[in-house]
Amino acid sequence: MSNKYEYLSHVLTNYFSVSVGDSEAAAVSALREDMGGNQALAAGVRQDFAAALADPNFSWQSILETLDVATALDEAGAREYASSLFNKISSR
Image (cartoon, rainbow, N blue to C red):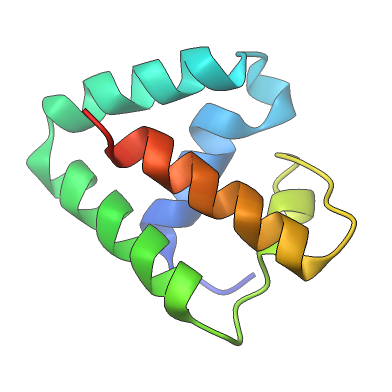
């Protein structure tokens, strides 16, 4: 997998992967807390999510499945899930 979006990969692997075992709400809460104490993390996560969502060549379906976060029926569903997740992470 490409390291083009390193923060995105980090977040999906360490907060949202099924192997972590947290609910989505718990993962969002933990990430938001960590982002609150680490401005570099916060900026990187927001930038990577926004850039990947705007990148027509980026496959959300592939990354979500590869990192064992979620299974989507199609790319549109995966992007919709990612957008929803980004909104939850970014809202305060």
